[in-house]
Length: 144
Image (cartoon, rainbow, N blue to C red; front, side, top):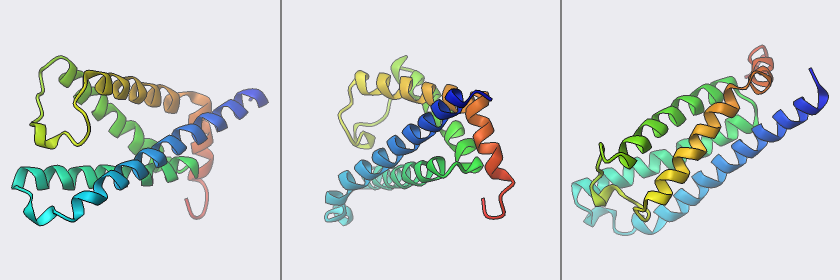
């Protein structure tokens, strides 16, 4: 394959992985203040806190897996990105309305639109044949 194309695919993988790591870290940091009053939260708020915690850890771990070119991380990130695309489209089309208590950050349509575009780009980038080939190389390793 073209050396320049391989370098671009390496950059794309590093960029996606780094962004996912940063998103996970920021989400985790945003949740720390909530730990102090977790016991006083009502059930729906606790569910939101737990879901946000799981999402933060998942994002961080997937980012590490993408940077390390793990095939499972690629597959899982494509899967979760597709879920997010569908949910963001539903939110933007007003087919899905989340309770305000589940909204951790500001509930603006701009945030949903940016998330939608970002996750669509992730799917397109990780489905690229050259990017996909880099992950296929890893699947034959002894400790993938």
